[in-house]
Image (tube, rainbow, N blue to C red; front, top):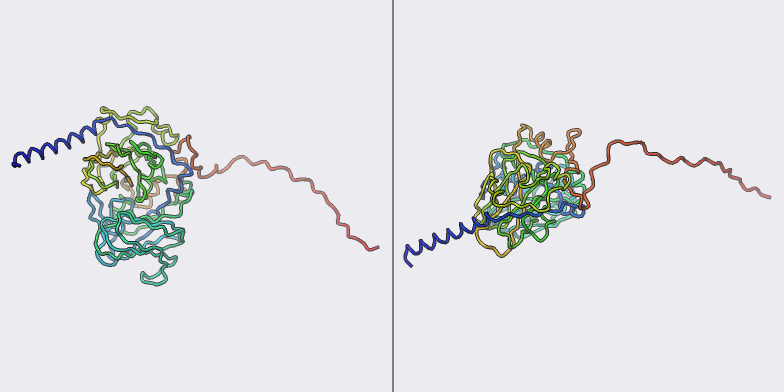
Length: 445
């Protein structure tokens, strides 16, 4: 084959790929409404205790501080600070070198732990997990071993509970170095995670702008955010798996979906500057949008989350799509993760579209979509208290209002947090009249 012919075929192949991608973007995008979260689903969304805003801390042998935390960009991650494991961005990982590494995660109080999971990117070896309710040296024999696994898959998950612990020790014996991300130490599932979310307990001495950005995720199923629309899928009820803070759970789009897409409702207009996502590793083009309102919808957007009034189907034709400008776009060559930073922009909805560059026989899956804003306050505690997980503020503590979950009327909704503070006095029945009955002692004849 001549060089000119080879060059021509290569050019034709690139043109065909470009035309295929262009045609997929030009097609009408039809999105189906996701059913609201019900009481029966609540146990599927446990809280992740391994987060700085819950008061968790992590100790690592390298001693890298939070100030050394580096953000991931597009499909790259060069972070080496263990602080990334307790942040909310699943694209920011922690590098594990060859040999033995021990990570110690602690909580403010003893917790009831159910499962532990994390993403594994290339690490080969073993991990030993132990728990304790008291502070112990890392090599103490008093640690209670709960799990031992071989690191050979992309996802590591251990069922260890219910078990009470204040400290969790993860010991890695690494043969081939790599990185881990998305650490989750989940509490025993309970409805109270929705009705009475935990107050923020963030108390970090060594702060940084980087940490302030990714420490608090605005797309959280335990707060106001929820998956509102998806382009396909056999079980739409599972769409909130994309914002549940569990990389081990994911949502499957239809196998024939040429352009998987989803709309996330943040519950209110919020200022954003970063969006990240983890999904099935494929060669895909990704567009991220921040929208003030739903395109083509005449519904009052302020009432959508509260009343579930969003239309059952949202259609975006060529003209509607042409009017939308993505805040950022990424071409991922198979890493399965993407993160984009952009100038601050306000919006209530996040639209994410994936366009695979080649046909795939299997369904496209998305594990997590995260969004972050800038903490404008110099105090991270104040910024997080008044931030995205807003609720009722009392005595310096924040408790989210259950009415903000945006649950629809067409399902059995999660109950409200509490009855009104005061009400009219409750009328009690009058007590029965008092009757004295004398006790007569028997007498002998």
